[in-house]
Image 1 (cartoon, rainbow, N blue to C red):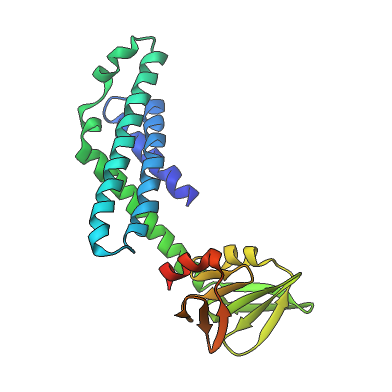
Image 2 (spheres, rainbow, N blue to C red):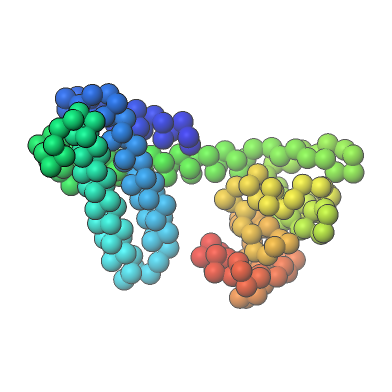
Length: 229
C-alpha cells in the first residue's frame, strides 16, 4: 500500500511537471493530493453501508468537503512556492495552472487514486484470506489456510484457534496480533473473540453463532458487528 501511494505521488508529480512546474513543486502537489484521496477511499465505503436516502446526501458532503480541502491545500502550496521564489505572496494565483484549479480535473485525479487504493485493498484482503498461516501449538508447527479458521478465543496468557475440521490449537500470540495477521475477513466481536466473517451469523444483538457455537458480542464491538454482519 505504501508503494502504491509513492507511485501515485510520483505520477502526480510528472503530470504537474508537464504543466510547466518544477519537479519539486510537482512532488509537493502530489503530497497535497495524498490526504484528499485517502479521505475519499476511507469515507465513501462507509457511506455505502448506509440507507439509500442518506447515502447520496452524505456522499455529496464528503466529495464537496474533500474538494474544498484539495483547493485549500493547492492555494497554500502555491503561496509557499511564491515565498520560496521570493515573490509577493499575493501573486500566488497567477502561478496556478488553470487546469489544477478545475474541480472536474481535481475530482478525476482524486477518484482514480482513491479507487485504485480501494481495489488494491480488496486484492490484498483476498490474498491474505487464502494465505497459509503458520504458528506453534504445543511445541509443534501448525500451518492452516486462513479461511479454515473459524474463530479465535483469548484465554488470559494464551489463545485457542478453532479450525473448520473440528480441531483446536493453543498458541501464545495475542489476539490483537491475530487480528492484524488475518485481516479484514475476520471480525472482532469481543475482547476475547475474533471470528471468521464468512462463517459468523449475527443471531441476536448479543450473540454471534459460528458453526453452531454461540459467542458473546461485547458492547464495545456491537456497532461494528451490526455493520459487518
